[in-house]
Image 1 (cartoon, rainbow, N blue to C red):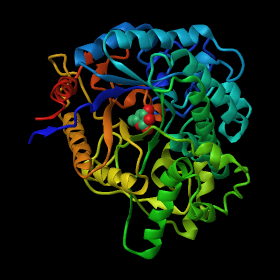
Image 2 (cartoon, rainbow, N blue to C red):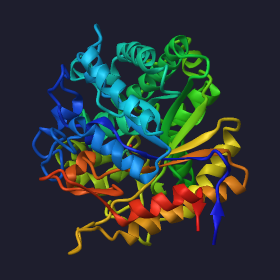
Image 3 (cartoon, rainbow, N blue to C red):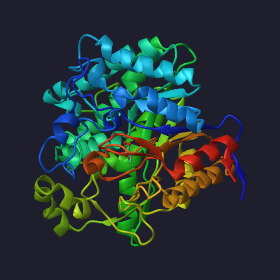
Image 4 (spheres, protein in one colour):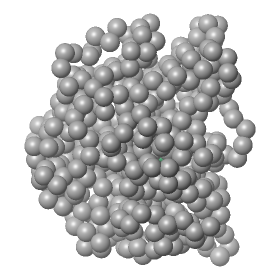
Length: 470
Ligand code: FCB
């Protein structure tokens, strides 16, 4: 079946600084929380770090040439805060900014439109030493950093995204400890949620002050499509609760200027919310030009029992990977994730493209008026280079095809989706899973650093050229 996308629909690929750059101690970059965390024993599944990753820092030209070969209209990358303001506050490190300035020029030279993310999780370690996202001051430091990048690149970059997936930063970074900085304290996680939201609002205002009037401000959320495991009222309630924790804790303050009453009420046993000050919600709910959505897989939950809740806290701290299966839903102890039957990726994530359409329709219905861009979607599979030196990743092509079609369905049902970015341009450092999970449409050999386009690369080139699926 042929599916054509609207004229002007933007096709892209996405990456993130710590996942691809390497060169962690070059040109004045200081450590981020991910440098510290990835070097702690037992935190990364395969014991690898992002010290070298794809060495993109030294291979920008080669990587942009790959984009040109792909016929890529747009590229989403992130700026490493510790390159630009190494200790998180104070003077700008020109050499750090220059790296991104050159990247932008190289992209534009090849006709690739840059989409810039200011924060894809690499907080300067110096700020973490002062409390990180549990410290309100970090939000103000983030706005200063946003203004510095906006002032330097706003003449060439149209869209600035404040945060990538604040859900992960808050709940995995401070709640479950699976991500840097590795803290496991539910009340810290909720404090971080609010300071990330505040950081978004302050940065959005700061960006408006330095960007040309055509500049666009965005945030990328990893929204969950949450289903209840049964029709039992407590499970339905658990699904609503997780929706509030995972989605509405960000969507509502940003787009409606309020936290959902149910969220505030449900989590009173964790926090008194005193970190929300007068005026914060007005500061957070700045006009948004684009809402970025990352989507991979749906979620099913049931209500937790009291006995389960009693046994959880200790497990969080000492068995990070064991806890992945049995821990409460990150950010709340009132729900438990329930495995679903069906095909999965190498992450164990269920493949269910129809839930993507449903999620997009829900966002459009409940938060109308903001154009949506899919800033990440993709899949890890057990790729191997074949005897012919190529990765024949039919499974990835099927995944992408299904999800691109799901976006098309959403558009046909009236959802205003303007673009789609595949995760990822190339294999890279997949956070707590290290180099062991490959999401790229380009294969990276981590010894030789040779890049080899996979079958999915050639397939995606066809999608871009046709502006749709044939
Ligand atoms: C998202 C992250 C991205 C990548 C994909 C697989 O949560 O934003 O960096 O790790 O998942």
